[in-house]
Length: 182
Picture 1: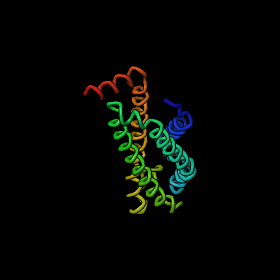
Picture 2: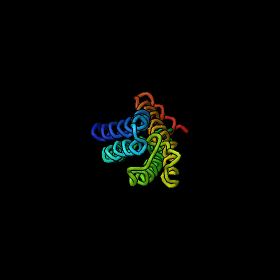
Picture 3: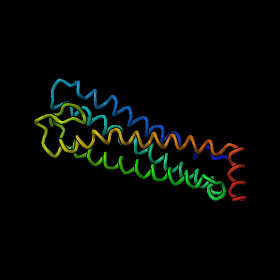
């Protein structure tokens, strides 16, 4: 089996940044924005941080996806021949699609919130009583999604670890023999 270090590295580094960046922003950035003295500045502080993260996140996601395709191509014989690998690929693909969807929806909501830079807020994801309804609604959805993206990408990290375990020589041998014997 040929090495595919570049694809694996792109996959892993991209996923690490996607997971870690969204988790750090959810844990720290949104809470830090609440520390601004002026309620009209709280949302602006969070918006600046999330807007600066967006291009880095897009690059991380792109790297992860390119690496994923490269790994899939490099492991095509194992996917076809080793029992359990195809199922793992399907789970990983489903999680990736869900994480992409949650990320895209979060960005759409974030754009709605950041379009109005001087809107009062309690934090990056908590509206104030005077926050306009459309922005407040977007913030409430973002409050949930800020945890959904790291949860989904964290699940991808776990499935990727499982995939690595499936590549142990003993597992490959067992998986191919299981497929042949039935």
